Length: 440
Image 1: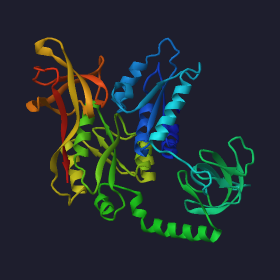
Image 2: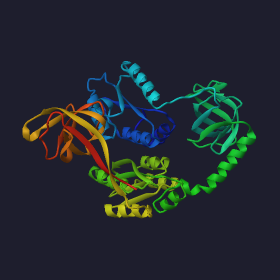
Image 3: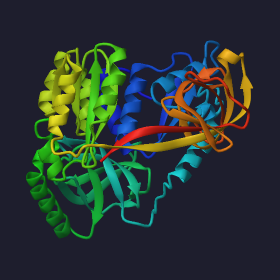
Image 4: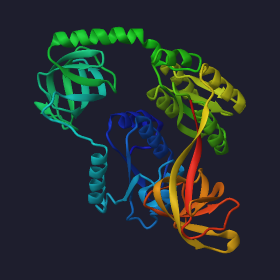
């Protein structure tokens, strides 16, 4: 939950990278804002589960259902509408729904098997670090696992040292910090970088040796720190990367989906192409920060970069490519992935739904379905099966939960389905949803 100003971009990126579960706070009156979309992208790039807290439900203008629809547009389908994202309506001011939010966090933590052992040596990550004239390197660390103690010898990125002093978040001296506790430590040989890992080691000699090895490895692998289309094949061949992360910006919203789809279809077994964030408008510093954090590139289609973003990209060595013809973009990425095999098309069955009721007039019928297996999607193709025989194969025309259009529905939920050029539904029919995927 951060302000929308560009200055908070780094905070959102760093927060997503160091957390176990992201609680995405969305106001029920304002809805999904640009900084909300950015936070979602950072959380997805970091690979952490998202729990949505729809706040301010006590306000008269609150509209939680509108927020849920906006979340669907942002790629998050809430559980009650057939997805797997937990969304809890709350009021922080009136203390409504807080207990339910905490209970859901525990459920997600259990599902993710999030555990920590305070009896083990401390492991953590750097949140902030600075050089103080009187105290030396001052490092704020969040302990992830184990317990960090006063006097421990630690390796933090390319720095090391004995923990000479520790302070709590209120500035009080402490002797130890367990899992999920932030502390400020003194005693490192140099100022580490935000995002560096902290580990406790046996002695200062072990620490020195480890840092020396890391620095040698860093020098050898320095080329892996900056990914571009021109060096992509070398990076893949050397085993430095297995995924090309792309931040996509276009002039209009309508260009995003076809470009995104065409790019992601170019991936191979050796390297996947994944669009981690997309939007319309100029390329911003926020886009550069996300690409840098994800070791990715930025693609601009019929758009430009803001001056600040261009300067930041040069500093952070983030590759920005501009195009005005989609085929040129596809061709460049294909050439960057040279050596890939011809993709083989295979059918993947996503899920099955049973028709339990039929609604509407004959020419405009909707099948009331219950998803009995897997997950069904609006983008899937569909086989209609009756008593084991295929009646027809077609595509989805519409997918609804109650009165709302949805992108997908998971097993155990009811939904309404309409198909292209087919309305002769019968109760008991099985709808088999499938898609054709390209694999190597």
